[in-house]
Length: 114
Image 1: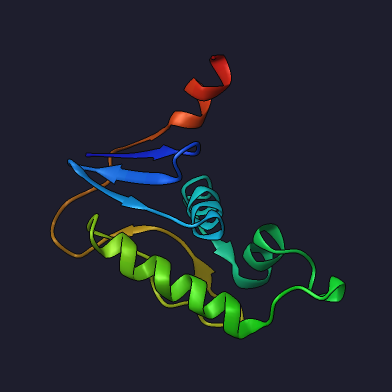
Image 2 (image 1 turned 180 degrees about the vertical axis):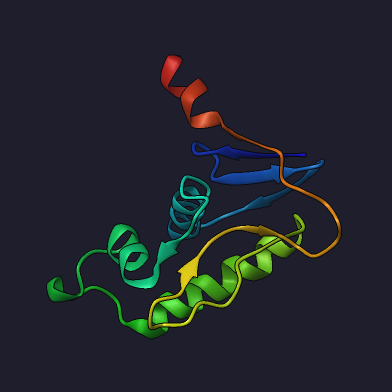
């Protein structure tokens, strides 16, 4: 099974199903795909938004974005497990359906070659 990310269109596709993502959702997904061992809450927040010290959006905006991304990824049979604020990691997992995510293609590399 493949997960294809298209940065230009901000879409994610897997097994013939595709979803459109907002810019922040797409950035989160890119970061999570690139970090199979997971990303801590603060690290993800600061990579996607900007430092809280710089007046970035609060926890509510971050939580809503993650929640929306979770709902969209469910269409592709993927999920982002709940993350404990104090030391947990966000990561992409295949929904418990017996499938395994074997290959991840980033179409971004192909875009760079054009």
